[in-house]
Amino acid sequence: MDYSPLLISLKVSITATFITFLIGIYVAYLVTKLNKFKGLIDGVLTLPLVLPPTVVGFFLLVSLGKNSIVGKYLALYDKSVVFSLTAAVVASTVVSLPLMYRTTRGAFEQLDRDIIHVAKTLGLSEHKIFLKIMLPNSFPSIMAGTVLAFARALGEFGATIMVAGNIPGKTQTMSVAVYTAVQAGNRHLAYKWVLVMAVISFVAMIIMNRFDKNQFAKVRKAVS
Amino acid sequence: MLYIDIKKQLGDFTLDIRIETNKETLALFGASGCGKTVTLKCIAGIEKPDEGEIVLGDKTLFSSKKKINLPPQKRNVGLLFQSYALFPNMTLEENIAVSIPKNCPNKDKIIKEKIKEFSLEGLENNYPHELSGGQQQRTALARMLVNEPEILMLDEPFSALDEHLRWKLEQKLIDTLHNYGKTALYVSHNKDEVYRIADKIAIYNHGKIQSIGDKQEIFNRPGNVDAAKLIGCNNISKARKIGRNRIYAIDWGLELESEEMVQDDLKYIGIYGSNLDISNGMVPENTFPMKIINRIENPFSSTLVLRHERGVDTSYKSHIYLEINSKKSPDEIYLDEPVYVHFKKEKLLLLY
Image (cartoon, rainbow over all chains, first blue to last red; front, side, top):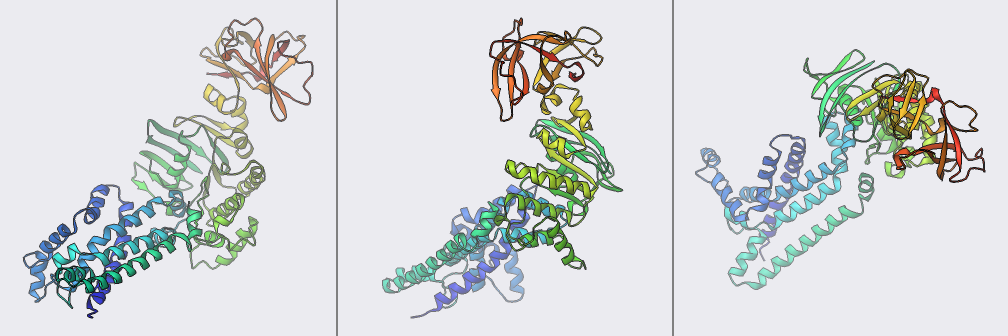
C-alpha cells in the first residue's frame, strides 16, 4: 500500500495547524482590541467557515493562479503555487483559521475585564499582559481551538482539490485518496483510509476533552 | 493631591464631577450605578472622560485641553476591585511579584515584607481559588501596594465578604490606609462602613456630587433629601416654612420648632429614628401625642411605627419610625396606646 496520502495529510495539516495557531491567536488579540471595523474584519475572517469549501478553493485558485498578481510574481522565478503541496497547506490554513480565531477570541473576550484592568494599573505592559495573563488564562480554549483546527485541516477536501488538485504522491491527501478510491471502485482501499482518518479524529477528540476537563480545571474554576 | 474635574456621558445621565482632595480618605457614596466606579476608572485610565482634567500630585493624568491621556501603566495608581481580580493562573506570591520590575534589587525582600505585613505567610504557593475571601482581599491589597501608588482606590472591597469577616478586615484596611498616608478614594453604598473608614464623604446622585464634606458634617447636615435617604434617615416628611424657626411637616401633620434658621425654600424635614424620644409629655416643645401602630423587632433594638394621634392622613407617608434599645424598652408600650414623642429640635435635618 502507498502511504504517501497519510504523510502528505499529516505534513499539510500539521503545517497548516501551526500557521493557523500563530495567526489565529494574533488576529484574535488584535480584533478584541479594535474599536472600529470590528464587525467587518470579524466577518472577513469568519467567511471561510460559512462559504462552501469549493467556493473558498475557487477564490484561492483565482488569487493564486497563473493570471493572478501572486502567480505572475512567482512566475518570474519560475515557480507556481497552485497544484503543489504549498497550495494544499494554504487551503487547509484558510479553512481552519476561522475555528482557531473564533475559539480564541471567545476565550479572550470571556476573560474578566477587571483582571486586565488591574494588570494595567499595576504597570504591566500590553505585551506582558498578553503573554502572562491573557494567554495562560485562555489556554484550555486555545488548545481546544487548535485541535478543532487540526481536525478541520486534516479533513479538508473541497478547497484542497480545487487549488492543489489530486496528484498521487504529491498533493493527494487522505480525504482526496478516499474519494479517488471510491471513484475507482476500490472499496478495500477506501475502507483503509477511512479507518486511518477515523482513528486520528478520535484521538484528536480525546485530546480536546482532556484539555477541557482535567488538567486545567484549576484555572477554569478560578476564572469562572 | 488629587484634582479631578471631568464630564462623561453615561447612558441616560452625565457624570459631571469636581473633586479636590489631599492625603485623606474620601468616600464616594451613593446608590448603585450613579457613576462612582466610573470615576475611579477614569482616574485609573481604564475609561476616558469626554472632557476635563485629572491631576495627581504634580502629574497631569488627563487633560482634554492639553490632549494628555496617560495610559494606566504610567499613572501609578492603585485600584482594588470588588472581585479583587487576582490573576487566576498565578500563585499568591506570583500575583504580588508580577508588577515588580525584574531588575529591582530588593524584589525578594519587598515580596517577603508584603506577605508578612498582610499575614499571608504559608500561602505563597496557593492559587487564588484556594484562598478564602479574606485572604484574597489581603493578597489584592498587598499586590496593589507593592509599587507604592500615589493614590489608592477601593471599589466596594467588602461587598463580596461575609458579615463576620468584614469587621476584622475593615480594621485592617483602616490601619493600612492610615499608615499609607496618601490620598485614598473609597467607593461604597454602605453608610456605616463609609462613616467608619472615610474622613470625608462625597455624596453622588445621578452622576453629580450633591454634597461633599467632613463625614460628621455630612451625617449631621445632609442638606437635601437624597443625601438624607442615603445616610439612613428613615423619617422624612414634606415640609414648608411657617416661621423663622418653625416648620410644618406636611406628611406627618406636625408643627415643629427647629434650632437652625429655616430658609424659604425648605422642601423636606427629616430626623433619625434614634433622635426621637418617648417622653412623659412634660416638655411641651416639639412633643406630640402619637399612636403606636406597630412594633418591629430588630436583633438589638425595636422600631415603633407611630402616627400623630389627631392626624387625618393614615397612609404610610404619615408614619414615623422611632428606634428604641430593646433592653431599655419599657414593657408598658402597647399597640394602639397613646404615647408622647419628643422631636429634638437640634437634631432636625432641614432638607432643601
